[in-house]
Image (tube, rainbow, N blue to C red):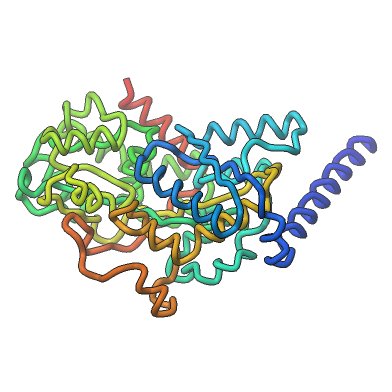
Length: 401
């Protein structure tokens, strides 16, 4: 027993020492960090499934090279969980020279990395551009799936569940409530669906329904328990049982991805679809992928939204380069370009109204483009990350066959 106690104490002491070293590394003078970053190669592990995103990251790479002498290599991922597994294996093997320096992350993956000690930091609130982040108006910049960020990841972009409908094919006004959505689906059978969970947008739609029907959303800010799930799940399944016969293929099959649904809408097979980027439909209309008759809306009262982040693995080789890259990607220049519908259309994390006039002007005029969201609704925080797996498992049990 005494030996076990000593081992635990030793492990705790090592963890404390490592955390102290990480904090000291992040707290160095910024000019010193910038000098150390020059000449480093930053391997940025990020989803690679969008041409717009990939093109934007190529621009970021060029700016970092010119401004800071940093080489940014985009390691394209199909699923961020790949990177989590890799860093976990590196920790198990005792590797201090990790394969990832910066990662695009949030939600379950952040929760896993934070709890397993796979992240460097805290560093996020030491970045010079953190002072521009809208932590008051956008509280999810400090909370990730109900988990405190604690400075272990830097806010990069905003997202919120939104719907878009081709008004030429479905002239009935877009639904504003879940009851309205059922009525719309009854008027347009087979013209709506949602991606099959565990695809992220599909799971988010299911969570949206669950939160909308719950008498008190506060329960979702706490970790999952079977008792809490049993109290709120019956209403969810009852509502989905009503919706599914009205969906594409009567809910016996579900589209594989939002991309598949976009194509189905463009082809006229669907009349309504989903996105987690409220600017995406305007981007698609501008690129002539969707017709100008597309309109974007959110359910009255609010829809689920979150912030996506940049994090640094505990064993990153180019920690300084990663911090400088994250700071640049939070700059008004980079955020405005990312928010531009012609480039990506990813909503900014910055408090634009508080920026100096010259920086504020980068974000363009207020006149919405065709297909743009015109009546934004409040953002509802994501349920705690521990709810995701039980929701998906039960959905698959009921509807996944």
